[in-house]
Length: 427
Image 1 (cartoon, rainbow, N blue to C red):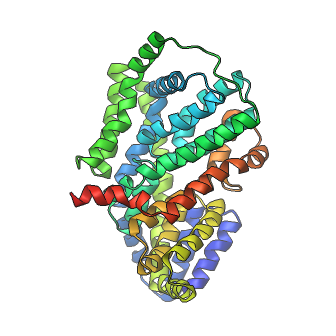
Image 2: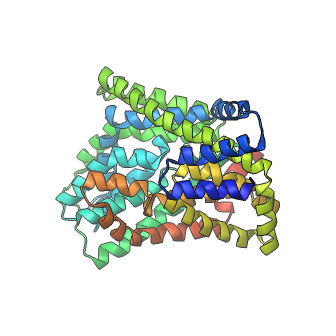
Image 3: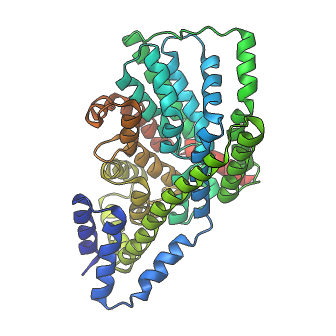
């Protein structure tokens, strides 16, 4: 049994709908049995994969996502952005984009942002006359910035798999996140004039804006503290996550005073459930990647890709195409665990910056959250907005355009991702 047969069996199981963790773990286990390798290798490799200090950050950021609504932070942030954007055509669509950027600096995950903000955003847009399908689509698309701006769960996972600096990779997402927001705002501007979107109905006096901003200021400071901690070297990824949990608890208990023991326990239960799923995927992917490495599949793939071209830009564009397809059929964490060991070696060998590559890989897979048949953001917004998934799949395509434009910009201009971490660590 060779590496291509292991990979082929994995793809077959995945297509048949077998859970991805099983689809990865079962072929690897069969290979080990057939090759006569001691079964203890399975337990050893899988336990080593989850016994990782950086992965603790993933657990903590999942908990932060569970705390967002319970602590009362989310509605306050939405009110602040809504008041500041003011009465412009398509104002609530702009609010949707901007508030997701702020939430990106707290939760580190697109689905957490949708869960925290989706109901508020979609309800407000429906009340002002937006079509519910549009409200759901812009909510799903705007949340894509969540895993790009630091802190980011997928970037932390990629850094661990690729064995590169987690802090540098987190910092690399700052400017690309602004590129995404700019592209989405241009798209909203175009749609607002084409479809004559409504203007914000509510008028805010300067006194009301000041009051709303004062109330929301502690929540607004969360991403500021987190990014500043990274820039100043106070936090690594895990410490950053721990501070985010502590600050969220502080706001909920002492500032907004909406945190209850029931919400705290419920959030912990949700975190344990989500963590168990993620760790199962990580452990299975570890043994799967080890088998592929033993069979020298990464080296063979490197030879194939470098045999086609050694131009780093062309290789990056090829990887973009591959990952956009992979993102349609594969859950993000599983795709990171499987694809990173395969694509990182040849692109590093071709001279692609590891930090730039990590950002591009994650960005591709985040776009995959919006594409059927496995677009988790589509399913989540479908539930919140009570719109059939098939209808969501039809209306989401125009919202992919600004994301693909942003991806192309970040791919073609590596300094957008690499300048900030290089500058910070050069000082």
